[in-house]
Length: 416
Image (cartoon, rainbow, N blue to C red; front, side):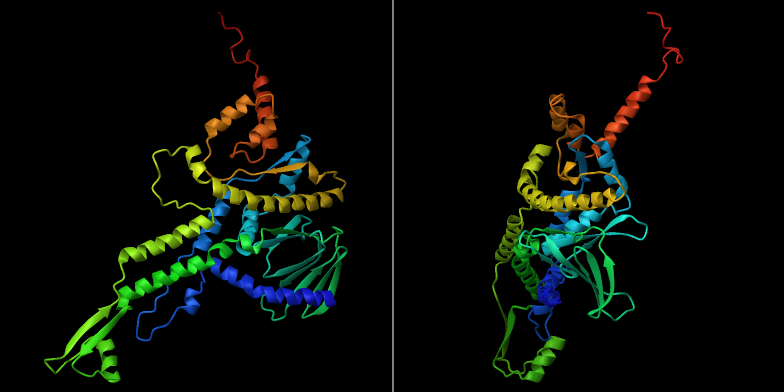
């Protein structure tokens, strides 16, 4: 129990940092908490959420096309089993897993068998879960923290290799057996330092601050000071001036003028542009609002996206490890039903949702005819969800065409 308490303490210490990461993704930036308040002045807050923008862009690039599975041994029953057993999963499951990884740098996929006896999964993150691993990174203890609607009590489940303990307000209330015989969780992580949040938080804060200052300057001359010479302006008169905008001077020698900061508009524009360019640069993203050159072919567009594609590939490789763990746990469950499948037989492929030169791809497939299998060739096409099923469709169509009796169609007795 001492180890469990230490895991909980570490979880609570880290939770605040992860909450800040979630806040920034949701648009709750520091500009709303730390912006300097000026009495009787405009105090608008401007927040341009580039963190959310970049995270969603990467999700679209990675999972705009479906993940495909290929059996290394050509066993089509294996890939069919995956599609069949995971049919009840949401189509956006992989996207949501990737979103949690992009936001926090780490996410967890917890596996269980639902009330209908179907293999299922729950996506968790460092705000509601904690894990203890061995020296090889394998989970030894996993904790899931949660609450129930209309219930003020706190709950958490502790997963071990052989059992699951359920706690309510730190009191053990139930123990269940773990059918998987190992902690049923996969850790998907790219690390905090690789998140969009860590890369551009300060840059985004600076941009928000400059934009807020400028909009407030327009609203009420935030950078201007009123100069009054030849008379005294007391606090009461100053307050009246702010509210009515009128100053009555009785002396002819009195003079009123504005002293403003002569800030060049181009300087402000360049500063904002530099911050925006820096955010695009450090995240390897490109500005889609930039005017494109005349060459807009698929290859040209993809060349501009090459660094973003490399980052997305790194993110997907991490997700692919979790997908592999998912298949491993699924097959472990199916093996309990006397279905002998090996997760090591499965290759996981994805096609980034960026401009594709399908003509070139088709020509490449044609040139590789006889060198690679038809199933592998089909996996290169982004619109093919399951190459194995597509192969079955092709065989079925060919069989139906071959079975057509041309004699009955009146085509067998045509004279030359």
